[in-house]
Image (tube, rainbow, N blue to C red; front, side, top):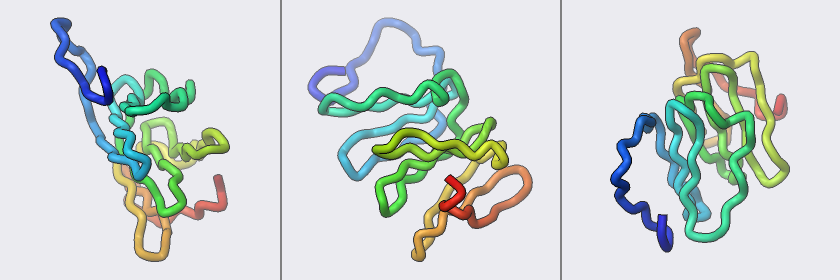
Length: 119
């Protein structure tokens, strides 16, 4: 990446992109089958270790700039205070924020509104 641009590489990429999230701060988060990638024009915060080497299945940024990340291993929330995880929501394949600010979580057991205070 140079000056905020992704440049082609001669190496063949073995990683599959699964989810994309353009953030309000201008960053682009890419969820892959081997973890979370952040593309930023300015120096970015490091991706927390729990999101390395784990398939990222879904992402959404809420009105408070929290980034919610769905994985096979749980639901993660990233913000300026760090990372929180709810391991009871496994196999999160869809995330959505409704008009009231509720985060809806979808997975193999259906969908439900998530009580954001749990994280």
